[in-house]
Image 1 (cartoon, rainbow, N blue to C red):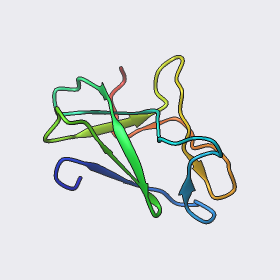
Image 2 (image 1 turned 45 degrees about the vertical axis):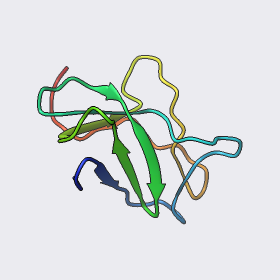
Image 3 (image 1 turned 90 degrees about the horizontal axis):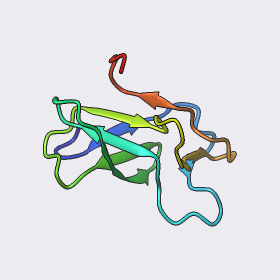
Length: 93
């Protein structure tokens, strides 16, 4: 975490993280404070990281990507391969 953002580092980005052609905004992320109440998050790509935040969460503790049964998510690597579903905590919800 860096302040009010969670910074997610990725390996095997094959040239960096990207958005698919035609996408303007990174989507599919959610974050939560320690209370575990996940909210749809804003996100941006910075090199091999994704920075994730929500204006109402000042102390983010958890993040997840493409975690709902049906989700729109668009993070890809330099080869255009999509990022898989993940979460940063070990909860079994």
